[in-house]
Length: 517
Image 1 (cartoon, helix red, strand yellow):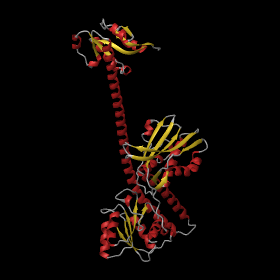
Image 2: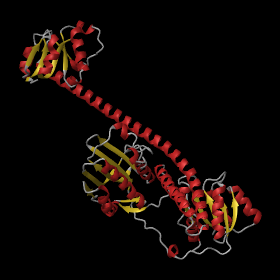
Image 3: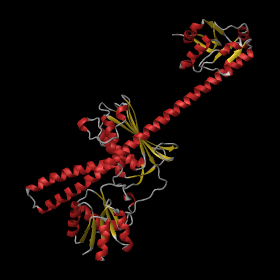
Image 4: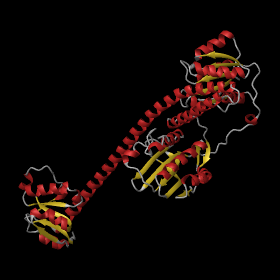
């Protein structure tokens, strides 16, 4: 509907004022009268600067209707008072002094009241807007906090399951290899055992993904320059997404160094790229953008400078109910084609690197994943020594103390270390190990211990034994990181190493051999 030419004042016909017309003329204001019952309809068809209503019951009622309609929340409204008695009427709305104008009406007073009323409504509208924004921010923070707590709970469950499963896999893999080593080449049973080992290897990758999601997979973070990482993976990405997808890399204008496991960074980028490709079956554009940002306030990140990596596509997008679950393990929209662990793995890897990941998506318009990673100020180069590449040699007749509360794993380590020439002492707990060393007054050359033990942890056991034998070699084993000090094991001191479960006999001996080079 086309609106008529604007007027400065729309005056209810019920307003009784002999001086109003003269005041409008002196103030240079245009004025139009409308029947009281048609004021609202007139506002819908004519642009109006302000409304004048009578300070009567009918005027108060109409004022309430105006205030209840967000279209007129910024519109100045004045009540014209011809007698003080008019203000004694009951009303749920109490006008401010700037919204009352008394007879006789003067030009200056009319202009002043209009300006004051307009200012009041602007302030009220601004206050409502700020309140709405604050409420929205609080609601978003609450939603993010609830989601973080939910993911943390799922992560603890996944980590615990993966830990127990890794113990089982260590036994399955080790004993299968023991049997295979005893079989002559060509024995048909070797093929059967090969299938067992393949299945165990697949299960190991599954637990590795669960541990990544729960932020408990062992990692080796080093300083990584983000632009270089994107350049290095460009060729692989190009082949992965296919010719029907245009790949665009937008590097950061500044050098961005983050602390990250290079292999895991590639895994994060590849997983997001594969999801983007699947969302664009008919083709589209995949854009990777690196930039620097400063975080001032964030519910999950401390203030500071961050590298921000955006992975965007213009594919099918996702509805809100799907976005709310995409980082949960085993949730997939790909049916039988997906395991539901790709994005949950990405989530865990980013969180373990002390970063943050979030997603924005619109059905039919595409999806953007945003990853924020803390920048590191100095580049620390990885410690390399000739010892790492030297030939491995076991100490002849050395004594190895193996501490593990899982009998099957204890037997596998005893068998492997015994075959390598060690005299093996076994214990099922830290307290039992300490008592064994005291009773035998034994000098131990090697301690191989699980982290989680009944009572005293394996990490603390190593510290107690080193009090008497400072040069004791220690190999710490665990199904997952981040528990009871595992993430602070000093693996760069030359006499301490970490071996993640599941592992094989050769992997165990390889780690031990490096400790004695």
